[in-house]
Length: 110
Length: 115
Image (cartoon, rainbow over all chains, first blue to last red; front, side, top):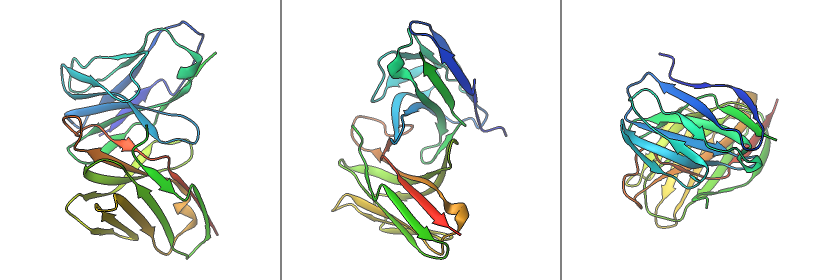
């Protein structure tokens, strides 16, 4: 199993551009989540999903959209990138207990 | 806002010593988990303790949970240089509907183990 995969690993955007961060898991987990990690901080939940077709907002959802059309995929869309969205983004999938994290996408918005 | 607060923010010890990290949280929880993050990498799950458990062991790791004080501690015994990493506590809360897939993380403790 590949576990949780994320693409791209690195991305540089200009302010106002849009993009989609990809996340896929092959463990047939119901639950998937997106977090961002800023320097010196823990992870903050952006959006999460409890199954295909069901998503909800986390702690810091503004500026991001998600959808979950399949169990495997959970893309995160930045609608109009802002410098405040410069961060490392982690996708996770989970059972009802532990979460499995992807390797992260390092995003810089200039 | 962050649910968990971790203490200390940084810890520097010699190989062979024990390392203790503490975590406090604010709301009622279903479980509390500890994760490790090596520099520039994703998080790796270490151990989970449920709200009705008081202590749990896994190899060199020992976790305690005191729900009356809303606090937890992670003890790493006989530390090794390879234990150098950031350690985060994360809580799965009973507040706000389903807790599955939603974790609230502390700010982490940076552990450095010198050979």
